[in-house]
Image (tube, rainbow, N blue to C red; front, side, top):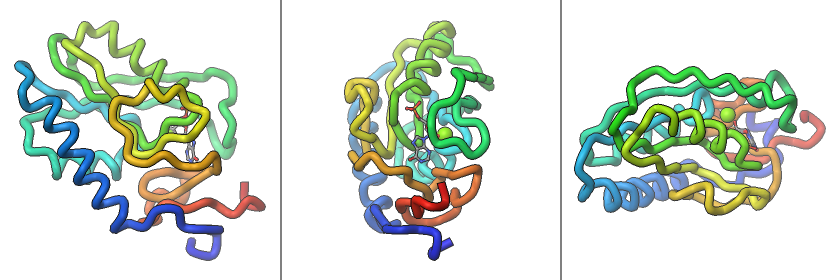
Length: 177
Ligand code: IMP
Ligand code: MG
């Protein structure tokens, strides 16, 4: 995989340190609130971020996954708005924190937020590890890193479902896209 990465943007140690400090920011917000917390990771990109984040969160919480398809196959641009949201879990009256790997145009988060709002949760917030400059900054309540507008892979982020297991976050060589 290494040969297919043009440049490493964030090394695993740097990511781990930021995930720990994000967890502290998140805990500060939710610890004083009454009622249960449910984290809603957007599959599959959020799985590694989620796994690391929850182990740094000293809070009682549940997980309800959503599956969204916006980038079918090998495309790197939003295709047709083929948004398929499958929710597993009950959110009524709960504090919901949507967790995603990256905020780009914001379409994914907006769709998921709208879908989850229909479940009558007590609150909805969003946490993303990465944010690109195109995004409406206000869409994410918790942000790990602001990055440049390049296609990145690793730490859960994929290209055509590959590279999710690359431990750092790197820019994929342009000729592979
Ligand atoms: P948005 O709907 O444009 O905000 O895009 C968010 C979704 O697109 C994320 O959940 C990612 O799965 C995917 N995505 C956007 N940019 C990248 C990238 O640079 N690498 C890998 N996936 C990306
Ligand atoms: Mg994704």
